[in-house]
Length: 136
Image 1 (cartoon, rainbow, N blue to C red):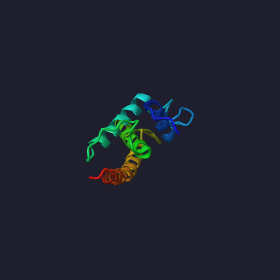
Image 2: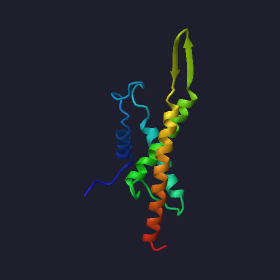
Image 3: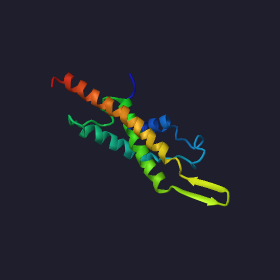
């Protein structure tokens, strides 16, 4: 039997899934997202699940789908990173040399949109299935 899921373990699982490690981040020094920000995104994901009808009160330990929780957490994390990148975006030109700092914000928007559309459908289907299984 597998170990119960803890917040700390799940934060590391999210980091592993998005491959946010210093040795893999070529343009970011260290990790792009702190454990605290991943944990906060996890809290937002759980809140979104619990406030999507039918209402529930699950925790990370009792969440009915690890995959949905992972993707919801990443959607909220990418929202935060995307907002930061958009806020810090600027173009610099010096003669024929041009730099676009934080020019990846559109890519974050595309990832958020893709993940959001996939996870929203999965949430709806699972909520319906759980409702049926509960006899509602």
